[in-house]
Image 1: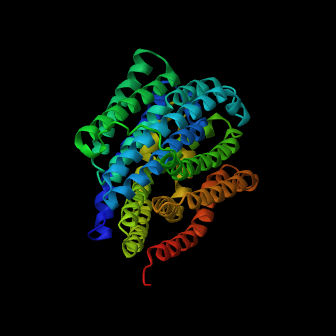
Image 2: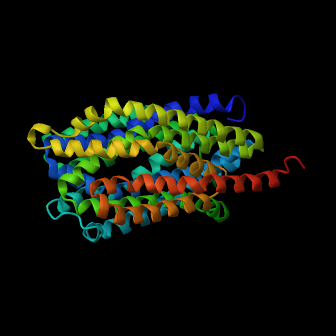
Image 3: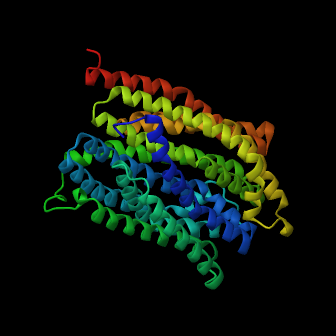
Length: 446
């Protein structure tokens, strides 16, 4: 990442990530399709009702892993293999401690949280069964994301794709097994998800151990280095929390959606699944720019960092335009995958399409969030992602509780775009301030 065209590097690095992210979405998408097709609309709505909570724990795992890998990428760029391995070891330790605490806390308060967001009574039990299992299996998600982030930190974006493909296919088989053979409904798809993630994490760990000798642990690597742990947490926790803060915003919108009944909850769930699938290129570009920024910061290449951010922004604009036109052709067919319209689900499908048609217009500001939030994190900032996440949370909360008063369901659909625009406005200024500080430290032009 420290040599060659930034534009070409980002494309080559992000494409495997994009495919990998699509396969990762298969976890939740297959859960939703299997439940919608073989269990019913209420079960589909139950999965939709816990979407914000699921996003919170999964996003926490992604943010934590990406944040912990920042130091690894910086040491890799600087050529310091000993410190790189130490950062990896302390990342494993810190992930265990943080994961156990978060998993236990969310599991204990699962039902009260669902009651607090006014989850419809006819779906709350199924929703609690699903999300409780996800909480119990949080460590599997945390370690998978940590190991994948470590691989990406040293420039390997293809291997996580292969491992994820295998576990995604396994998830499909397990979903069908736990729903059709052993009729566990929502609990069954949750078990399938956790098992698939655990297998993916194990395969990733052993691959790193075999493929990269520099990461093979040695005597003393797991001796607690509190300074290293503090540095990891200073980057990783804000990264994880910023995902969780965004999830709180999603949960706030879910409260507004829950008041419309289970059919609208199901429609909103389908719509957000399609939106997530179409925005995965932004996630991939965000991961790419984070690794790119971290390695070039370690190498002291200020100009390459700046050129990389510009190249990434151009790619975001291109994908936003492609997504807009692509939505005309794929939104409706994808919506029909989730539910059988002949069994009373046509209104659910129609409302899902309304959601996608509304948000797709605002993909450029969404892409900017991924660019600057993860890019600045890759440069070592935990504060900038947090500032943008809080801005997004406040904007989404205000929109979710005001717009539906005048526009009904359509007002809820606009809650996320309003939040994206507000966060996207402030992030470029934060990035410029951070770059000035980096330039000063590196004494560029002095």
